[in-house]
Image 1 (cartoon, rainbow, N blue to C red):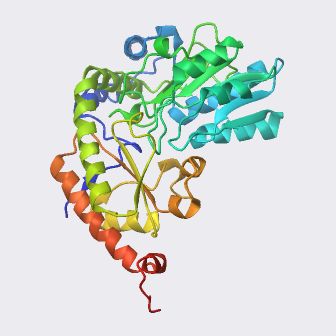
Image 2 (cartoon, rainbow, N blue to C red):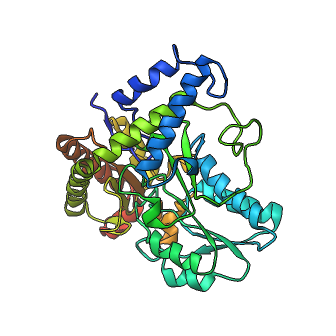
Length: 395
């Protein structure tokens, strides 16, 4: 059976060149990077080189790069670490209503356990935060603003530079979750003007289980992971040397080929979107049409359930998602789509397709053809659709 992977926003395969650069650090160069002997120093040198490389690729300094187990840990550290560090100054955190679960859960935890007040900024119909809403939400108790750079479900890219400037006018720290953005679009912490930024290797053809929290010099969040003296005493735990090496190699390749990959992937996405809009009735294209990641296409198909579409596509060998992979076990409709104003019954029919550099135009055509068949079949069994069509459904 033909197998097509259109879930690159959930994870990407490890690039073969990246894997080859990682392999020596599983075997011959396996030493603990914090050991003083030669085996350990081989690992320490590789980590230092990777730290310098990653820093240069995002416009940061090496001592501003802190390795984590992934985007979720980085997000948790940013929210909890900064909130606890600043709680003598204030107890108010601002985020958006369409953040990843790692941000939402962290905010909920500091509200419950430490009495923080959380403001969830609304978004417009395209999923964009309005700068004026942020400005109006700031109080003299606000200590942190966290707005994601690009949404994981609908791909909308936020005006982070403008939002960060508004926060900084009031002396407030700004964090962005850039997990979906890094490796897909140009990202520079200098250009964005953020104080903290999270990202993860497995979104740009690197290994799972390794990420980064960028912390601007002078910013000192409370430690989240205590233990040894790793990461300049800021994050305990044995350094994942193969993962760090792989992350640096993957990011370097992604940035070096960014323009070429952007154009190619966007071309595939645009062809897919055009065919779906023209050939499948009652299909709603979610998110901003222009200010979005090149790989993302999120559609709501009216009158049918997204989970049914997802399972039918999987049986046809096509992998996609009904939303964030971190929330795929939930039967609740997407909080992101509801925040954009999409009615709950339409949000239930949403599917996220996310393209990668190894997909082809032939695969796009195959997926659209199969999708048309599946949607038609499921709607034929839908009482709601039959009612719209003026037909009587025999039960």
